[in-house]
Image 1 (cartoon, helix red, strand yellow):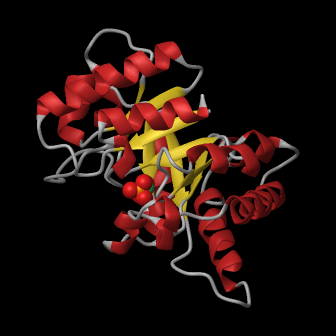
Image 2 (cartoon, protein in one colour):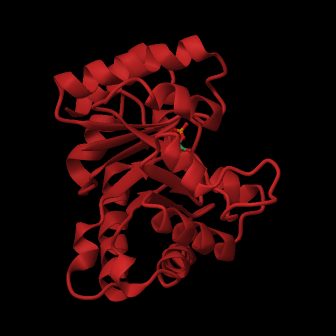
Length: 247
Ligand code: PGA
């Protein structure tokens, strides 16, 4: 099980960031869960510099710029040098701020070129009776993957995050049965897009109101490989309860 903690802009004080890292290290030691923290970029270097760690780090986003005159941008190579080994790409909050399919595809390339494993986020705004959302998800996956060299197309983590379920509470998350259907669908799309069986190796995470109350049921029924957790990852006690419930 892989749990990626997306701290978003919730954590603003270095002390809180350090306390969460300490908790994450203890959880990673005591369970078989792999934990990857995605702190705000200014905290990445500070946290990742603390000796060798059993906890991994992710950038929350990367620039499409490679280097040079791009004031305010954090490039993939800078984030890699600061300690990230993953990069969240195409989070719905970035897409809502104007990130297009083309930009997401470019960022996938930038991440992989610098040795960062992309965590590609896809998810529909809403569900419709005719199942148009399925074609939407397919398009988000295809446009991001087909921009990569064929050999690199399975080097990612895929996070399914329905936008309608993000930032609420466990009662508003997807139902386990609906999640298992979605995982089957995503596996089918990956099998179509990728050569041979390589799509089967891509870990699929679920994100959207994962809390200690629902994590176990979601993990048990659905065939997912882990979670991308937002608000429930920024309180040490809540995060502990969540990790322990699935470990
Ligand atoms: P949430 O966020 O857990 O607060 O719903 C998940 C995400 O946006 O990655």
